[in-house]
Amino acid sequence: MKSLAHYEEAFAEFRKTTSFRDFLLEIASWQPITLYRRSVGVSRYPEIKVPRFGNIVKSDKYPELQDGLARSSELARTSRSLFDIMSELFLTTPIPALFSAKNDDNSEYADCAGSTKNAYLSIIANHGENMLYSFSIKSADNVYNSAGVWDHCENIYCSSGVTGSSNIFYSRYLDNCHDIWFSRNMIGCAECIFCEGLQNQSYCINNKVLEKEEYLAKKAQILSQKWEFERWYAAMPKDSKNLSSVNSTGTFVSMSENVENGHWIYHVKDARNATFTGGGSEKTDLYDTVTCGATGHMYATLNGKFFSYYLTQCTYCIGCIGLKNKSYCIFNEQYTKEEWEVLADKIFSQMERDGTFGKFFPASINPFYFNDTLAHFIDDSFSREEVVNRGFLWRDAAIRADIPAGAEIVTTHELDQFESTEGDWKIDSAILPKIIRDDAGNFYRITQIELDFLTRYALPLPRTHWADRMRQAVGMR
Image (tube, rainbow, N blue to C red; front, side, top):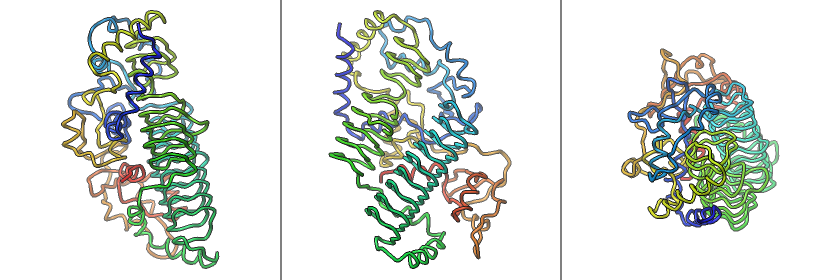
């Protein structure tokens, strides 16, 4: 019998050879960045004609079900393939509509949220207040339409790759900055507009240092052109310089070492094909990893080792779903350590023989629309035909998440009637009860918290759906 260490090493070596594109297809496609409206409320899972996850329950009802998820079965002793069994379990095992954590206040419309207040239509939001339409936010307040904002940030709007900064608008890849507009790749800067690659500079426009009075006058003139804001942001290149990192490639690899194909990586050492990972103490040995913030030594995993899904405080689990505080389980069945080791060897040996060892869940059981996942947000060169032919799902219908029925609909081309054109910038609160339809036919609305922020910083109403705003923040191309 081969040891568990043997299989872990073999699995790691296999994943170390994966191309970045295959990593996106196989693993990043399991990280949704769009939420949907279902009968059980807003959910990470779309409703599809032939379900792949069959028992979606309300998030607040899920904790009372978890103790009963461990089952008595003989699945681990059969000769069926692991992926075939997992396909069955995904259809029969309860799973929450959203991955909600604890200590949340007014965050029932956020996925993977913890210790938050007013987290709304955001994914992976932790330790902050007022996080709207954003992805991978930690220890930050007042974050809108942004991604990869970490470590004591405040007032971040339409920006990505931001650490330790405040008052950042339409910008990318900043560390320890404040009052920055339409700029990127900056460290320790303040009061800069249309700048790139600066360190420890202030009162700059187009990388030119100005006297404070001249800068403030030009800033006022630039920021009066609100109809240009989204166009300027869209035109900004998305490539980045890696900040304070050694021997590393990718996008916004910050304070890291020996990282290949890292994207939005912070405090990581020795990693390959890793996205939105790190923070706090240094993480090591991460291969083919999506949104890992807690631990190192993770290989091709999402919420649990060994082909499992949505595990909480679990160890040594294979093919398990939704368990909490469990160890030595296979297909949600409890075993002794000795039994588990024998069955684990049987399962992994069979996977080695049939060529599936080292691979992740197949496309045929992926429950997400591929074009609404991190994979397509990072790289939109994947075509509908390509991914559908591989077995993935693709969304063609318009998005409606938290949209009340019967509300008056206005188009994005009609929004200027709610914005002030003279004097002090104001947005008419009459927009609040209305639903906005963008050019793609998707529906969104403006919340009171969002309106207050837009008014405070004299920002225009957004003209694109919130999912496309996140796509612009995350996208590499």
